[in-house]
Length: 180
Image 1 (cartoon, rainbow, N blue to C red):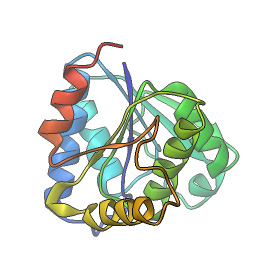
Image 2 (image 1 turned 180 degrees about the vertical axis):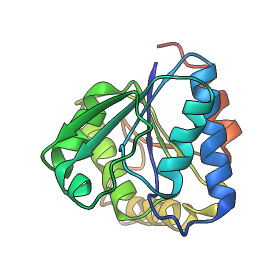
Image 3 (image 1 turned 30 degrees about the vertical axis):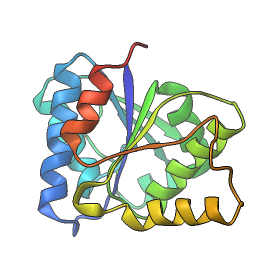
């Protein structure tokens, strides 16, 4: 399977998250999967790709021109897809991937996650999105989703919802048990 990982590119993010991202990338490719990710340098992006590289796996990076112009193009992908902008990056990531994993991140990560959720809700795909809530990173988001449900701005029962897990190991177990 092609597993897309959304994650922080901030080099200031906790080393604990970097270690988890490395384990995720390494284990995914050791299990025969391909890593698909944003193709930029920094933070968890480097860590997940370095893990996949250590596991000698295939790494597909999808990177927009603006990030290349900012000199953030990673040399880790075994295949690199250059796109004109962030919207095309999201489109390519969604088309290429069988499963999505969201590690801790910032606005870009949230944008990618919400794009997958929104397109899944309207029936454009039924691909699994696993959000790794390590160290309670996504607790506030989980609370906000519950709040939206109580306010009836989103249905309590939907045809598509992300799955939240507490660790990379739990995420890997979910992927291992998929029948795609």
